[in-house]
Image 1 (cartoon, rainbow, N blue to C red):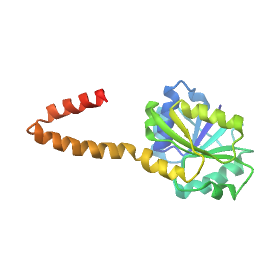
Image 2: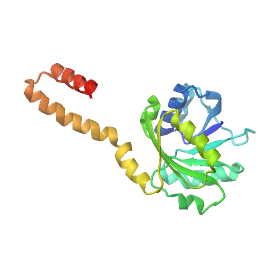
Image 3: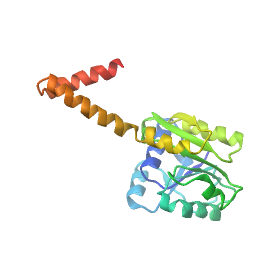
Image 4: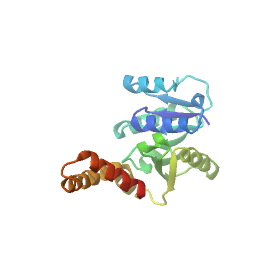
Length: 204
């Protein structure tokens, strides 16, 4: 499948690296982004920029832009490509805003996290109008970078974003508190505290 990431920021880069690590062919991954920093990072990964005039069979578009740019990007895809299948990584914009523009598009929302880069990601999916066969193809792609959770209600995407998307931040916050308590037990010996924490985590 040829995949185009419309937006090449952090989450797109993490997902692309995860796909590459899983063996997905770089020749089947493209991006659309004018940001020089993002372009340079994707160039290092040997991912090609997509030319709108390119005669290429595109199987999937992934919207990975900021919320303020999402509707413009969505309209741009509809304008330049026939019958596109679109997955949105954009937080906060509900399906009905996209579908109001075009009801016939196969569309779903997905929310991955940056751990996808290491193939340890967790991706939540809410399907709006993908046909079953195409949905299975998308799920198989997402499984390459980690666990896939299918949600029956779109509202649960927001809950997922708060719990899973922010999960690492919560974890490190608690770890800092734990470390502070251990330092008092170990008379400020940071090396001993680090060793204790590592052993505890290995034993979980």
